[in-house]
Length: 70
Image (cartoon, rainbow, N blue to C red):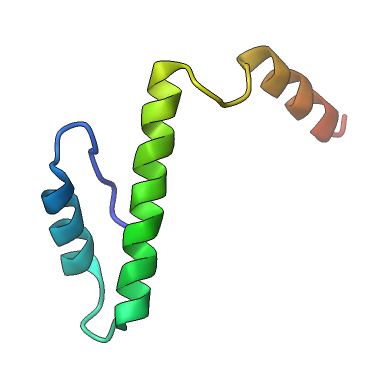
């Protein structure tokens, strides 16, 4: 998947860019799946920017510390 700048591109531009980046052999289902993924990423980025949802930084640090073997 190409990097998309959601805050600069319109939804139409995001769709066109995503479809153009896909291979000619991409099925309609693959295109739909890609667009649904991009929509979800865009929604979650917007929530993150508003400070809604997500995991607080301190909790992430604790989680990472517990996952890393020393």
